[in-house]
Image 1 (tube, rainbow, N blue to C red):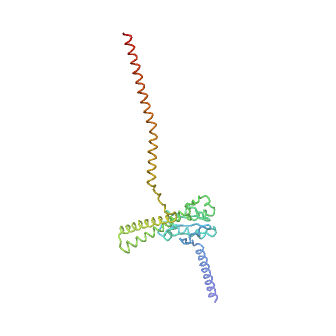
Image 2 (image 1 turned 90 degrees about the horizontal axis):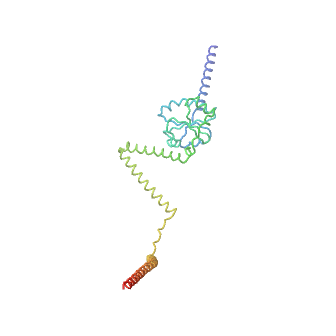
Image 3 (image 1 turned 60 degrees about the vertical axis):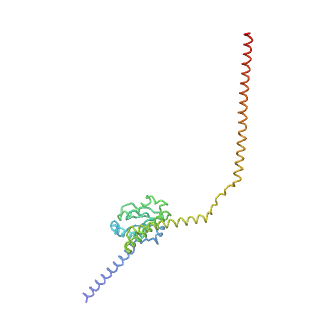
Length: 276
């Protein structure tokens, strides 16, 4: 009887130990989960204190970082920081919005101000980065490159559009058996048509908003002839003084020649009288 009671007590103690260990482990796992950020809820990182990891399932370095990141997420509550991660294969627009060019990439965010984490990806370094506020020594991302800026929003849309076009190309070539060059031709024609339609829309909008500029009315022919006659008369008036000056100079020259001839004649007569 005593042996059975001792066995029951041991069994009950073992059950309680396993049960409480399970609760503790489950609580740690729940506490240590990093929040998944997508294109629909990414704006939550604009408020509060965050550490955000960008990764891809196929990335070997991302796989190596996974255990460390999970441990860091467990300590996040004591560090007063929230931990999140972004799968760039599912949220392509976010990778463009944040300007992700390598994986894994870690960003620190404090009330909408973003900083790129460039320290070592070890647990102690991640913890010290938050505890010792090393992020204060890191230059924040400029406002024009911030994920919420107009430029980066447009870049995110470009990334998303590229994925859409890639999927369309895959469907055309694999599902419908279209050759690759045929798909490129279709994309080229679609691009030209889209440009033409956009140009026409812009022209119509400019005409509607600014109005059509009317061409200047041509001058009547009568005014032209009158102005031409006036110019001819003015030119004739300008030429008259010049003609008068030339005539006067010619008369003066003739008069001088006649005076010279008269003086020569007088000298000739004097010589003849002297000889006689």
